[in-house]
Amino acid sequence: MKQLLQNKVLNNWNLYWLISIPISIACALAMIRGDLSTGAGLLPLIEFSVYCAVPLIYLAFAASSLHGLFPSLFSRWLLRNRSIIGLCFATAMAWQLLSILWLVLVHTQFYLEEQYVLSDAIEGTVGYLLLLAMVLTSFKFGRRRLTPRQWKLLHKIGIYYIWAYIWSTYWWQVFSYPDPLPIDIIYYWAGFLAWGLRLGAWMKKNWQQPAVGRAV
Ligand code: HEM
Image (cartoon, rainbow, N blue to C red):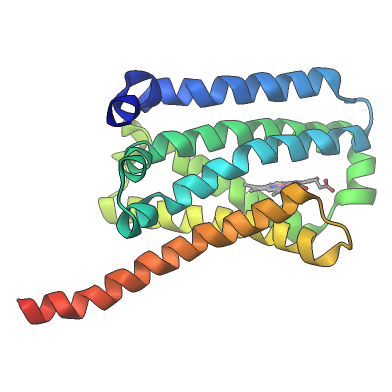
């Protein structure tokens, strides 16, 4: 297992290509086979790219907490590759952005009549701006423009915001529709679990701190 997780193919940029190429091929095929000539035809494409992206953001969101609570070879690997997994998420979301732009710019009337909600559009745009800032500051040239404190703050706010946006979307799907899809239910509970891990890690850290203080 140790050797497998240390394999070059499963780390750093090789891991990025390993995850992003199949996702991009799947999204491109879905676009080629899909119906781009109507607004309604674009909705499954938007959903499909999000389905590909969501597990990745949940993994990145829970990585450090999983390692703090249940350290293992897998959690160490996940932590080591957390930013690569975040970049894979951004790649899948780029496919969503392409479908959204197609919907908004080509089928504007359908979008305005059937989909447009001002608060959703604002929240989604803020999500993309945060994601873009996180991507740019994942590289040296962007990272050096921020102090370590600013970088940490940006990435913390960004990942919480995007997690909350996605999780609340699935919360809405699960609790406001009579027959939610199994994948919506899975993504709702997986998002809850990812947050639960963060909460657990936070509690562990805060309960341990006074004990450490006493020892010193
Ligand atoms: C980082 C930013 C964003 C995130 C994380 C996000 C996330 C999501 C999620 C989780 C879904 C539900 C997919 C499903 O039904 O399974 C969705 C659908 C959708 N999103 Fe976004 N979104 C973002 C930005 C935007 C923006 C900026 C717009 C438009 C201005 C937009 C328009 C839509 C539309 C039209 C759908 C399809 C709704 C339907 O199927 O009825 N999103 N998005």
